[in-house]
Every structure is written in structure tokens, then in C-alpha cells.
Image (tube, rainbow, N blue to C red):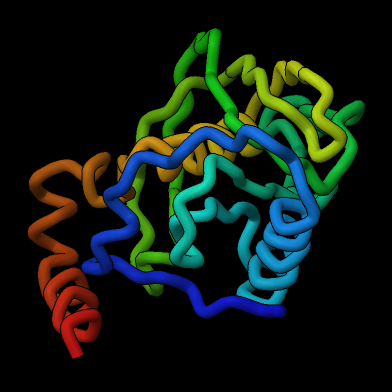
Length: 181
């Protein structure tokens, strides 16, 4: 089942995710449906809040062609198998700085320059219930941080500078208004 993407102005986006305890068929189905929704929306990642749920789950699938270091032109994370399904993810380590364009399925047609850590280490449970740790860099690190932000109720708009908020004010206002209908 494909979900409708929850957009800015919907209160569920500001909710902190509830940790997943038991990994049952409903959680596995939610993960599959989130992947379907992400793929059909041409996204790189999706958090449960973005489909109206509050479970601490996010999915990521970064194409190999996008996982390339700008300088070396080599894969940044060649050993990471996609898609990634993370339950209860927590970022334990952050290092370095990267600045780049970021968009969000919950903020259609809005792209802003955001500063993020260049490398992160994230621990989570996978769908089989095993503890996992990933150390990632580049665009994948940016995507992990973005999705974990969602699970913590932190939105793209919260990362925008005052100038970015002002330049996107019309689009943000329209999204909020559309959510009140």
C-alpha cells in the first residue's frame, strides 16, 4: 500500500517518534509500504511521520550513482547494502562538516543549503531485530541525519536560516494553508 506524503503544516511531523518494541508483521508491512511510497515519490529517505505514523522507523535507499565523493569520484559508502530500514535509530558520532542542497518530500519544491556532519555513526535495530551500526559519509550521512531529525520532530524549516525562511515564506504559507483544508 502506498501512503500519501504528510506535508508541512500537519502536526504529526512535529511529533517525536515512539520507539518500536515488538517487530511484528505490522511493522514489517509499514516498512515495505514506506519504501513503496518513497520510491513512487522519487525520494532518498522517508520517516514514519511523513506518512502519518509515529513509530521510530525510517527507510533510505541511495542509488550508487549518487553515493559518490565529489573530490575522489569514488563511492563514499560502497559496503552499505540498500535499502536501509532503521528502527529506533540514534546517531552516536558526528564528525566533519558538509554543506549542500537539501530537499524533503514533506516540503515539495523547496530546496535549501543546509550544514550537516560529513560523517555519522548510527545505531539501530534492523527488521529482524538485530542491533546494527553503520558508519556513513557524504550524501548518505546527510540523508541519515535528515531522517533521524524527522523522528525527533525536527523539520527542514527548523534548519533553515532566517533568510531561507523568508525566501520560502510563500511556499511555506501555502503548504500550511493546504493542510488546514
